[in-house]
Length: 355
Image 1 (cartoon, rainbow, N blue to C red):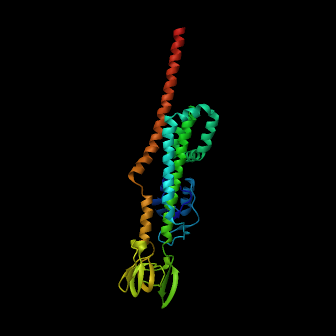
Image 2 (cartoon, rainbow, N blue to C red):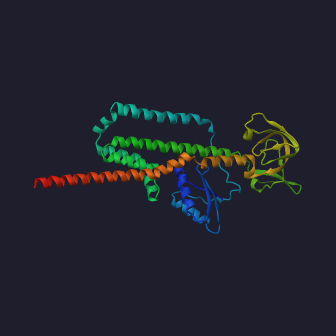
Image 3 (cartoon, rainbow, N blue to C red):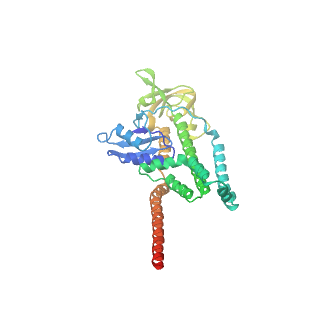
């Protein structure tokens, strides 16, 4: 079963949803895709229902729209997104901006003492207000995750920024907040591009098919086509299924599957694939694979699974963040207590000696 999920904007969000759903009894497996904005679950209907799944997702801080569909059913048509032809320029601009900020921080700020000069000249309350206002979105995200029992990278950076602010180094805290906001923007940027790529790929899939039934042609949704049925493809139409050509000849553009720019001539006995285009001629095709089982459908599935299955290093990083922050905070608290106990002991000794 596929469940649409709204509100995910970073890889950590998929983990939050995954943990929330995995905690439900009756769920055998959970795969969450950020790019497709959905979760694919296998469940025992006798132990868990859709309302329980929706509540679990909402408790994690995300939303489930009304649409919930079976994994093999027809998908809701997504509007076509703008072309990805302009992808390179925004990426280069983003990388250039990040590099410039890092260079400015490392060279101008530290080496030339600009940060120290600004810290001395700007009153601490003004600097603190700048840090709190600029970092509010990230601080809120870290606090929301903490209230739900999750320790994220945002929490680690937030504590660092607030600690720097507490000791009077508001400029250092501002630098931490700056890079936190840059990281958030990069995450949203890459997630949006991934979603757009998946939507563009999905938009290429055919939505209807012209099927021969009882000696007549009927146009039906692609989800209603059955294996073994005869599909009619006219000139200029997309081929809706994988199948074997039973009659007719056509020049087929197979670039969506093979990437080959030159069309191929097909005739009786030849094989055709869903999402390819019959430019010249017409075909009668016996369907061998339909919907998600077609070659194009499996490509979409592989893209979504590649995004949802993370590398081992990412899982190690998540576990490291979960243990690292409590350990560091504990060591800092212990150091604080020992230092104050030492001062108290010294004070007692001084008073005793004075007496």
